Length: 203
Image (cartoon, rainbow, N blue to C red):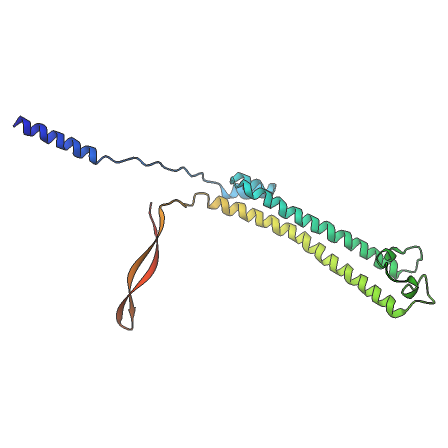
């Protein structure tokens, strides 16, 4: 009888050991504040990405701003050059001839009504005037668009920081799986076997 009691206790101990739960390592997720990320991105470009620990995005932020600033400089420089040339070409002052630096391959006597009033061709003069005016409009348009681009790119970086912070605790672990399962699909009163795609979340 004593032997049976001892055997029963040992079996219970074995079963108890088999049913022990194993502790799983829990991955800690750092929750970011979307409002703080937004304010940092607005205060200083790139700070929102640094706050979210997306350091690889910071060079992209400044590359975008650098490209837009270069576009502003390029278009502004050319706009100033052509607007001055246009003004000099249309005034009556012989000393103001900055347009001649832009028209290098043409004889001024064929298009300049101020320096060569007796030999210039009015059609040539009108063609050069319209050409300079078109260039003025072109570079002014893209200079203004470049200024708008600065604000648009800043908005993109702020939204990026906000979205990254909002999704900072989104679960992308291996517990998410995609499974294919058969399902009965009714067709004109009949049941047919087919396949559908279900996304199952396991926690």
